[in-house]
Image 1 (cartoon, protein in one colour):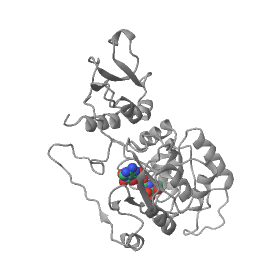
Image 2 (tube, rainbow, N blue to C red):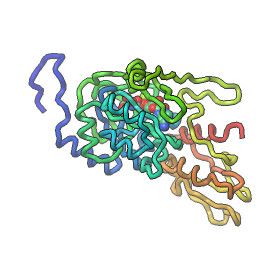
Image 3 (cartoon, rainbow, N blue to C red):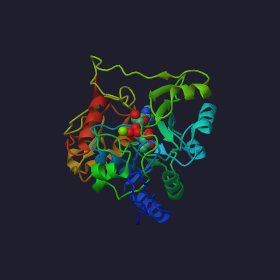
Image 4 (cartoon, helix red, strand yellow):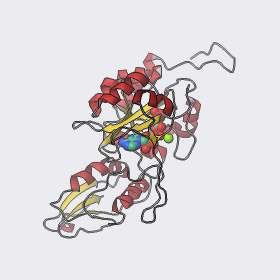
Length: 332
Ligand code: TXA
Ligand code: MG
């Protein structure tokens, strides 16, 4: 590709339609693609593909599972994935495409991976305001889960170059989109409660939201370090916890339990009446992460006395799996 200017302020050439088509094919095949948005570059994967979503967490090296934003090309696509009330319609009309993310109840037939919602019955949706992102979303025809395209704990990327440095080998390609115009993550607004609440202040000002909402939305504040719980920045109370007691590091199941297994299990290890659900038959932590929340939901039935989970190594995504399980088991 030729750069026609040697000026330092030259706008980088945006990804071509052919590059966008190729990226869409890679996404359909389950690979990850870095895409520019007006806020920050995102690390995108097919939100309906459990394994692709698990790979996003693996690539970021996140020690826990944060729920992810599903990116869509327009409000209609968002309304198909979620229960979309009139207030969401008004906000979408006013601010999409743009730096506003809406948290809404998942639609009954929502095809987005349970891992992308971190097991919650809600989903965050956003229409990004960037020509390359919008072209890719239309081309791929799938919702794209995309956190900021940096390794956990590093600074959010606002140039394609930042992504290449931080995540180069984890992505099939980095789509060029120039410098992010906003450079700050989207505002996350939770519409699932009695009143709208800002979960994360960001690209869209609270005052702008107030104009459409007719009231100044409250900003959620974390209560950190509660005595009886592990500190969990950004996550407290917003994760699925099963109703049944959860027993960790269970090398064998007790009568009446449902057993979530990891790796090969001999049939003789399975007492009569114990049901087994495999997180991964081959002991693959990416596969186990992809299955984790869906299997916790499946296991959480009053027909069982409790859920037992086999030990899972704390390597790669295993760290996040163990973190999540510890939280789910806390205080039970
Ligand atoms: O600007 C942005 O939002 C960028 C670009 C790439 O779109 N994305 C981004 O994603 O910042 P991420 O994963 O780094 O941040 C998503 C935020 C987190 O604070 C997360 O807790 C919140 O959205 N979130 C996502 N789903 C949620 C849900 N179902 N309930 C509550 N919060 C949710
Ligand atoms: Mg981030």
